[in-house]
Amino acid sequence: MKRGEAGGAGVQRRVLFWCLGIVAFGLVGMPRPGAAQRDFSKVEIETTRLGSGIAMLTGAGGNIGVSTGPDGVLMIDDQYAPLTDRILASVRALSD
Image 1 (tube, rainbow, N blue to C red):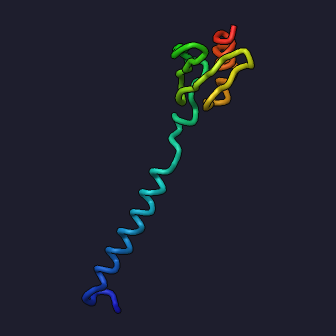
Image 2 (image 1 turned 180 degrees about the vertical axis):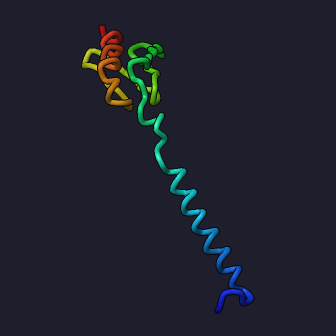
Image 3 (image 1 turned 30 degrees about the vertical axis):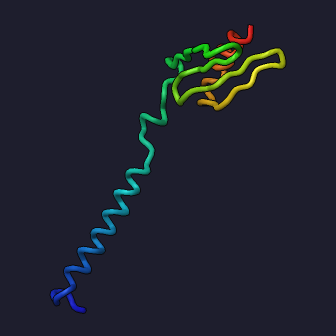
């Protein structure tokens, strides 16, 4: 089908639509610069005691469930690796 014939414009519109859709999808999936460069030195971890030997740590990235007992400490979930020292300090405070 030659350009200018009936139906040619419809095909071009469909191709343009798909190309724009693919580009938009790619842009949505791209990481945002601010999200990748979080300042972990300002993150605070809050401890909430839920019951005897059960607590929840809340901070950037989500919650951590902690169970403490005579056998040791069990942590459920995790957060960002740069927060490991702060998380462990909060767990030590629970188990002391």
